[in-house]
Length: 115
Image (tube, rainbow, N blue to C red):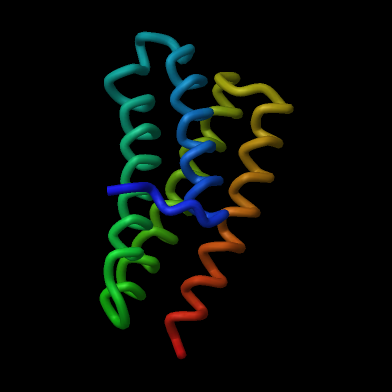
């Protein structure tokens, strides 16, 4: 199956790749706890978007709502990254900008399922 090339999917895929490159640099002491949780949440978010894309109606809305919850969780987890000095100020600004864009695209899609 080919990945959709709409802005939401492209931005999400690019962000997850960026995140994976940065979590590899997190301390090994956090690898099996925190880092794994961050990566898993990011993968779950992307997976929920893909599932939503393959469904219609209420099922799509359910997947999108769950994806929105994962995005909120990921935002909180990455705030910890900044507070633990795992990500710098410029990196967390990049994260915030991406979350803003992804959140807007996700919200528009979710709003479109209400019709």
